[in-house]
Amino acid sequence: MSDLHTRAQAAGLSREWQDAKGKDQVVSDEALAAILDRLDIDVGETVFVSGEVNEAVRVPDTCRDGVAMLTLENGQTFSVTIRDRALSGVAQPGYHRLEQGERQWTIAVAPARCPAPPPGKHWGSAVQIPSLREGHSAFGDFASLASAARTLGRAGAAALAISPVHALFPADAARFSPYAPSSRLFRNVWLAPAGDPVADTPDLIDWPNAAPDRMRDLRLVYDQLDETQRRAFGEWRVASGERLEAQARFDALHAYFHARDRANGWPDWPEEYRDANGEAVARFAAEHRDAIDFYAFAQWWADRALHDAADAAWGHGMAIGLIADLAIGVAMNGADGWSRRDELLTGLSIGAPPDPLGPDGQNWGITALSPFALRRQCFAPFIDTLRAVFAHAGGIRIDHALGLCRLWVVPDGAPADQGAYLAMPFADMLRILRIEAQRANQGRGAIVIGEDLGTVPPGFRDIMAKAGMLGMRVLPFERDAQGAFLPPDGWSDQAIAMTATHDIATVAGWWKGRDLEWRARIAGRAVASEDNATRADERTALWKAIGGDTPEPDDPSAVVDAAISAVAQTPCPLAIVPVEDVLGLDEQPNLPGTTDEHPNWRRRLPDTLDRSLARHEVAARIAVLNAR
Image (cartoon, rainbow, N blue to C red):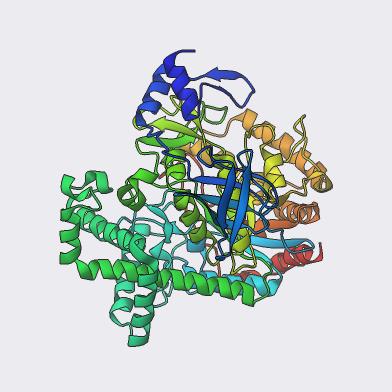
């Protein structure tokens, strides 16, 4: 083995990987060298270990056999004996401190599983918050979400899933994708409710005008705060600490340089402002205190409104409540990349290797937490991220859950196929996830859903199931080895059931071939005859699994009814039906691989949910969900 290969192996880089067809692939030496050049692999002395409740925990080699002191998270202290470099089982989950002489270590002890869903079978829906028409604003916000939660809760839903609400770039209305955030520690302030109702709005959100209008409305709210509100904001700001200050400083600086230079992020700023702790930034903060105060306020206002939406869900009968979404990473030129550069895989983007759907691979243009930084910092960045997303939620969905195990990393500027898989500290992260899930929701716990679609390594879903993480089973993908659709009773009970996701065609859209039409339109051609023929065969096969006589392609209503009935009959403890399928809509919220070619994250629902759910065919679908 060459020195390069030895160093790559030590860093957790895999030289070999299997593609979607099971064929072995080898990473080039050039790609390995480029990735290694960007990795800070120094983890220092091991000061963090994790283990399971009531099982022996392996301690670092620097901890000698003999007597040590264990201080539990609740403050209780015990004398313990280390034997064969192991601490005997600890019954209390949490982050404890082990001391021996002058040395100390953090011992994270995890419960056996994530919290289980409430007993019985339940259903929920999924919404894109900006699409909501509750509140009659230019786009839906957290107040709209609260109204939607009340409506769906009264209808019998146990959960309401939402896309990520992480902080974006408030001054740049072009960056409205929820999956490329500036930071995962704070909120998307565009979703903070403000402004007067709008008489009429178009079917597509006009972000370039609507987002700046929302920021101006938020400024009016800030200027009109009463003393009680200002005191509450001040207390929250103090409790939020220096991370909030860094976020507010970034947003103010970004607004300033975006307006002046059209800068996209901190790498485009003048050199002296790229250091979050530098003198130039401190001087800017002193001179622009009002702007920084406003951006801090916007975070408070957004967080308070999200809290109210969660309360509305629980208060109107939802057993689970809001299911938040955790994006896989952040934009490198955002707030976290600026102020927390040492926590991230700086110089590397994450994505996916080549596969039949993307023969050139995928570069998502975002980066992720560094496994080496996590070990150096006792996993504090991961813990902080989980706590931010668990706040106000009865469950979370982890986007690309395989990222807890490994990430496809690509050097900045390189093609996506010039990447490699980088191992993550999966066991530690999974234990931390279980700790945080159990203590979320004020100690009541929150369910965890891992997005495990596509190609995953053998055994990955088994590990998820053992940890109490629910997978995702989606109607168009549930097929046997021969490609036939599985009947509802053949689905896994270790997952949630879904008719669709925001990234694929709705049931009606799939049945009518809208996804084929979009792809063909983008390619500048008509739908290929073979594609139409394949879809016709698939329609027949799907209807055989869930229905009876095949309906006509242009009349999908019966198929939507049957699809909803099917996911309600699976063994899955929770069925999530996106609101687009509840309403029988043709168009999907997002078309992966496109930017301007398809109106991603811009579609509005046709009406408010309370009026929509009163429609006869929609009420009948909800009756089926409640009955099943």
